[in-house]
Structure formats: structure tokens, C-alpha cells
Length: 106
Image (cartoon, rainbow, N blue to C red; front, side, top):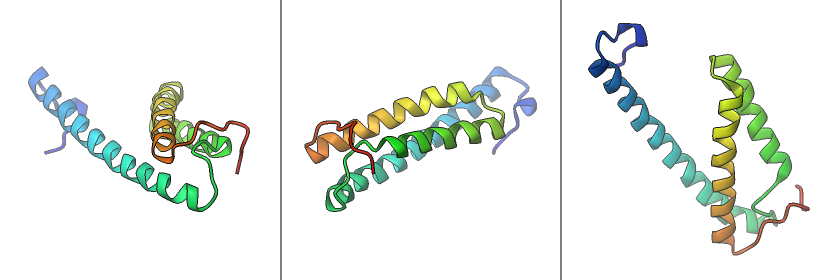
């Protein structure tokens, strides 16, 4: 059962909710990684590099805006997503067998 933070009356209840959220976040990140794997298959077919700077900027801007809307510190969201994006690009590069090409932008 999902609870609001104020509905938790003990640390045990609070920790159970944090653990529930952590499980959900890991599941979503694993789902996202599946799409990254698919991107590493599609990008070479479409002649795209792993790193596309305009897309990186777009993803981070979207995350900062959404974080602000949800009451999450946009600086924290940016830091977390920067790590996720960099991990994703490195994963694509390994699969694609191509080094980062920061000078290409599509």
C-alpha cells in the first residue's frame, strides 16, 4: 500500500516506503536501459553516433523542467541524469564499437 510521507508514523513504515520506491526506481531504470540497448542497434542503421549533443541537452533540460514542476531540486535531477546519460552513451559506444564523437551532432 502506498503512503504519503506524513502518513508514516514510525521509521519502520517510512523505510518500507523508501524501499518500495527504490524497487520502483530500479525497475524503471532497467526498463530505460532496455531502450538504450535498442538505440545502440538503431543508431548505426540510421548513421547516428552514440553521443548526440543536442539530444543530451534536450534530455537534461526536460529533466530539470520536470523536476522543478514536481518540487525536486533541478540541480539534483540534472546531476543524477547526467550520470544516467553518460552511462547510457558509454553503453551504446561499447555495443556499437565506436568511440565518442563529440564533434558530430544530428
